[in-house]
Length: 185
Image 1 (spheres, one colour):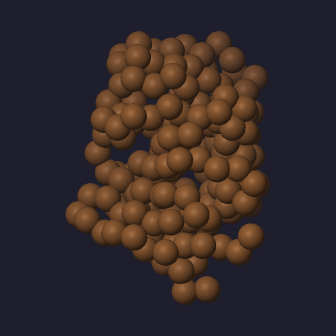
Image 2 (cartoon, rainbow, N blue to C red):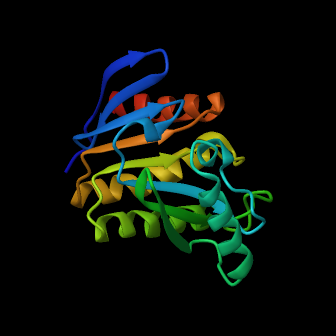
């Protein structure tokens, strides 16, 4: 299947695209205000959780994630662990590498983490998903890595809606740049 990526609508806080015939939304704010049945949150071994998203959730969820990571130090980049909350039945923490300089396989570990998270979403038949994209990696390179993983899944599987939650304007710009480049191809 060829890449299908067209701009649908652009409004101040949300950008909509069709990507592999799926609705893709880039959004700022609180993704849990919508009906969501799966969330992927990048995290890493030094407990740099994505508090941008977690602050919208309950304190119990934050505590669960931190306690889990502290008691499961054997988690390595690429692993995932799951929990839930009153607002979302499945929250997946994708364990990503601590970024050093890009030479320690960080892109591969990041892809593995997102790959495993997407497999879990499909296994549990989740259709409306949120992917948090707030991180401290080089922006465009890692956006491409994540979208390559997502694109491979969308060639075979479908989701009703994918929302990329991001408050970092540089990453939002990188996502838009990547998707708009795909429109031209």
